[in-house]
Image 1 (cartoon, rainbow, N blue to C red):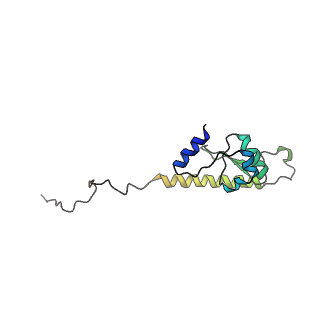
Image 2 (cartoon, rainbow, N blue to C red):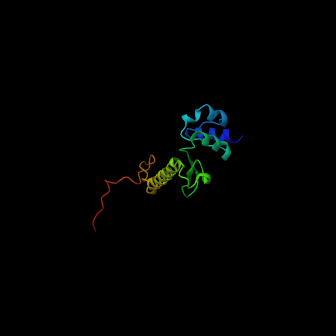
Image 3 (cartoon, rainbow, N blue to C red):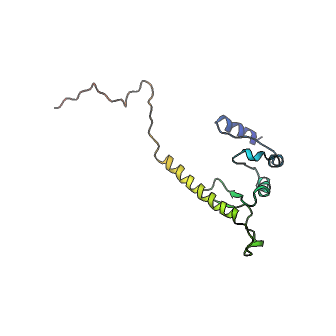
Length: 139
């Protein structure tokens, strides 16, 4: 009742948005590999499958915050802390993702800071056209 109308509206706006898909079949069949991102309606619904598939290099990203927030897929892993057995790959990817997101936000802000002025004019509106036939007389 909620998801399908939103997806249809996004499609009419020209966004590439697909779904909804059942989580078990979507992840189990490997169809998730055809998408750039997957949005789950509930934390546990998406995170369980995500951790099974990408525990070593996965990154959690919390969208919609004013600050960039990423974390390794494996969480804090207190049980292996200080033992020298942890794989740092997911942590490294979380740091790299945070840097990329921060830089992309800065670029986006810069792009929209000083937009170009209107480059076209309404038909029959010549108020901005240079008047070459008007001669000003010196007094």
